[in-house]
Image 1: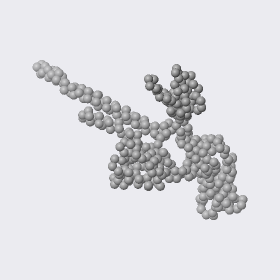
Image 2 (image 1 turned 180 degrees about the vertical axis):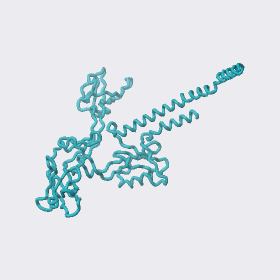
Image 3 (image 1 turned 90 degrees about the vertical axis):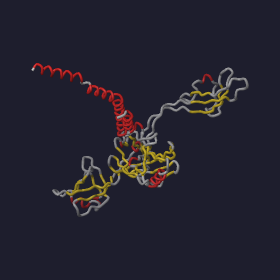
Image 4 (image 1 turned 45 degrees about the vertical axis):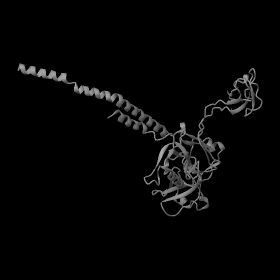
Length: 397
């Protein structure tokens, strides 16, 4: 195998992990009939972008946005919330020094040295670091403000551009807020025991009722409530009536005394991929159980009516000669999911192996082959020695 062939194979190995092209994302191909897409839509996450590229430039970008939350659970129990709002994680930034670009107020006269524009650095309070070299500035730093140097002769400048200093900002995790939260109505299944005719609940919340009491649940005025088992029983109101038949029945219940929460307990912050509560909800996990349909917005045509409209648009543009769609999946640096880091290590490992293959084929493989060939051919001395020994034995005989 030629060195070129070996390098070609190795190049494919190195290129295999690199599904992205030019930073646009992973190519999205049309199907064989050119009337659909080879795209797994479950891979299109919140804030992912579908890039349409032509001549190595993005000519359209469609951003995916997750649907609005429609139901929630708190530590596995259904809850109802009002005015639910979600906020994305924010990446912090390093400290940046401000700057002041100055240009001479009047151009140099004939025979004078040319007056050049200068750029000065600002401190954290947006004041000149070399303030001693300039007269005190009157007013706020803004365009066309006069700045006079203390040089001899003095030079009068005007502000051409002002960039304020920016302090260091820390990363902020994603979080969500709400105005109220309460436990939703639940449906509990009861089963009749064959040994003692008692009705017991099936599930995490434990109830037990005699057959007589169970049959009256939700019917009589004194059977509108039911308490859980345990040292600290919790009372639920009965929202449905039981029937006289079946050994299994479902009863709808609502927590009678809903807990009240301060604002601190109505904020849930992302920690290790989970929305964790605080205050009275400390260590409790809020989960968005269901969402509405994902929406898609083009920077050229605006919001699409639905996913089918997105597909039709992508197919139409994808059939245009020279245009190609790419999917760029959204990630958040340090907040990436564990599997994204794992895949990065897989890519790195494969690349290392590929480099090792290059070294073996190009440098080691050829040398070892030559060495093996020489050892296979260089057997003349051994054969001559064997022949001489055989001849000596025959003479003695």
